[in-house]
Length: 207
Image (cartoon, rainbow, N blue to C red; front, side, top):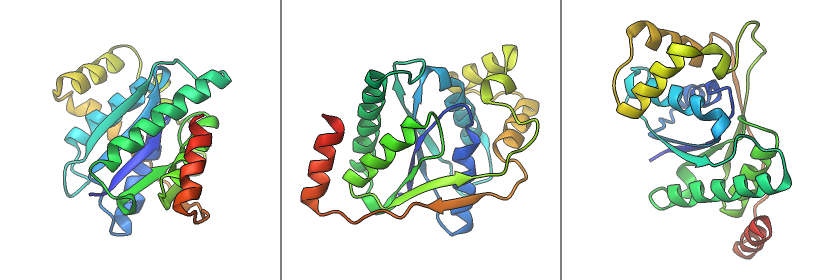
């Protein structure tokens, strides 16, 4: 089963853009696991609502969240907290998925977050490490500006209750998560490490 583990900030389209590009390559994602701070909670809810109701993919995609009990990453302590939560996400996924079927997305969140994700992916022997590159689009807002007030409440309610929001809101979410732009999915070349080197890297990263 193919799983994406993704850093995630205020631009949730980085997840669906990666899914769409992988699908073009014949890789169908069955699960998405995002690691978010509290400040990016709405990104998770938007993705969950979309993936629960979209017909863009051949099979329903399950989404899971490893939340980080921080509003943002603003200190060295916060970096270590996020790093440990990303480690927890990888361990949870590897309980039911091989490293060959795990794809790590580095495109979301603060710049510290993809660094942590990359180091941990290396330490676990994951080779499918990607960055999503999309052109700047005028007028595209971060998720907290795009969906405010009643819309944000409706999305959160639908996500938590498993209910279906209005068709109008679903369409707006779909257009937001699948902008009409050419996206580049860039695989990050990574060094091959021995088992001992991976073990030592993991020890140092989590120390």
